[in-house]
Image 1 (cartoon, rainbow, N blue to C red):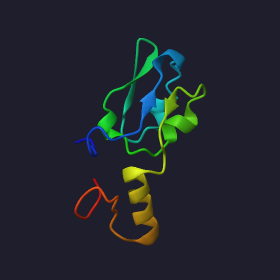
Image 2: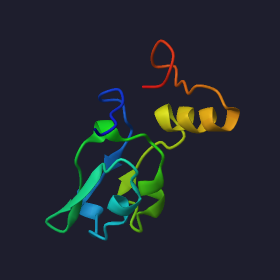
Image 3: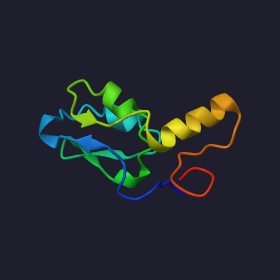
Image 4: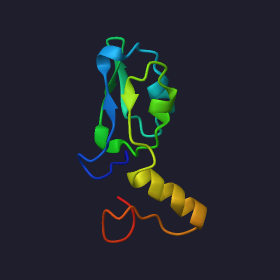
Length: 96
């Protein structure tokens, strides 16, 4: 089962015309949000994005943009650091 977060809230954006098809986004995305089709990256399911920012940081042509450090990714990381249950404020307890 693939993780999925709140629908239609991820800040992830891909400018396909800028993509060079290197595949870095597919290599670093922990939830498999990207695929390469016709020698370009495509977003396969934006709702699986946890906004960690790995794709944007590794894109050599800045074709991928995301507001890293927001939403579920931040909640999970802060949970690990504090030893508490993650919460991103998007629901009654817990994270997405």
